[in-house]
Image (tube, rainbow, N blue to C red; front, side):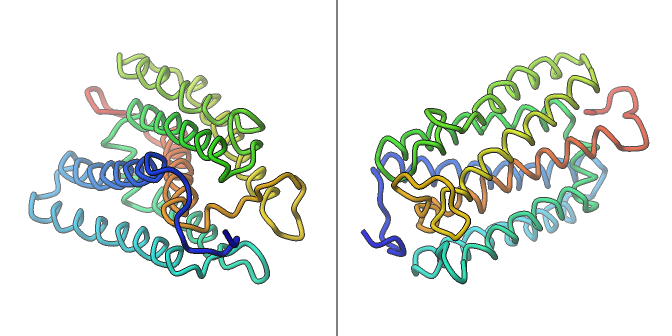
Length: 250
């Protein structure tokens, strides 16, 4: 298959897995918008309107990246049209986390949920391993190679459960968040250095081109975006100027 082919490769279960996880993350974001609005005292109709706007914008991003991939316009060589997707992902993740919406989510959702939801990365890593086994992706992008990000998901599950009991340790949360960022940065770097660009370091095949196709484009566009946003929200919780009042989710 040509590297810029829009045709979807991979097994049916693998494709379904990527779609299901993308939808799940979308729904979690929409739910966080609504729940945080209601908990902060926003009237039901206004909360619904805000949630619909957030859902529409998030859905537009998912649809736009999916359509671009389906039409075969995304690629990793000059000029790399995946560039706007990667930049857009970072802008969205950091922008939402630093926005008033992000502040409301931090204040109303609570640190246990902000940490625990990153357990979705366990499923990401299982899907990536299947992509490697299926010949879509180079080994170094899976946990059989240089990708250790599954540890972020496992520790998120454990730490989130511990925090849900009401216990708190800002140092522990900070250490976990820094570890998660480093593990995420590691696999993002490995992925970029496995792509067919002048900066490619890992020359084994296949090159990292599968993320330019549907549904795998949602790996960076949605899943990495969700992970980056989650870490930014946790940092915001850690360094917010006020402490949560007794009985608050934080």
